[in-house]
Length: 284
Image: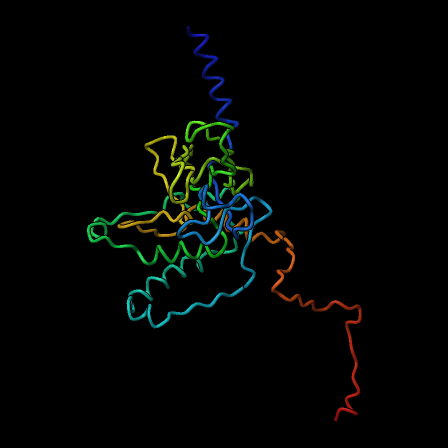
């Protein structure tokens, strides 16, 4: 009995020492892949994009982003609304050079969500948190908890009946911010999934639903994950949010895409003659 227990603990230690880093982020891009259809959970209400694989990410290339408030916003939210959005912008501007952080981002907290019971009782959403999530989405990060596991295919076997004979292909679209390997973790929480299948009706007909393997772990931790609701607010970004931004903003992350049919390509500095002289006397 005792020797078996000894070997068991040795095996457990070896397994733990070989586990991957417990973090993850997801990348966002356009709905340009054939499998990303509403039937299996993509391009549904509220989505502005779909998850992307490594090497398919999208990001803004503008150094400075300007923002403003229109009349509708000011009439409804007033100066308090302006202050709330400015606070969200301030959180983003407080980020320093992303390459200067430690490799494991240990200085960034894994939890940044807080709860306000009064706001919950009044069914209030936090505007600063909503703006912060929108910024993460616009910068190119998708919902990591949603896409740790996600459907790639759904098909019914010949002469089969739904849901018993439905077959699925499940993929990962969540990546470790240190190794960039596929990851089952988000901010230290291990995720598994089940598939919801309704066979007929409004889309989505089938979709993965992720959940923490340990029920005592707090799920839905990332700001990029649209994980806020009535009474919930974020004080800042989490470790995996910053890890995703660091991946996106990597100086050597360069991708070239073809020009859309409705766009025109203009190339500058495409000739070998860099200096051109002019007869300024004739010009005068």
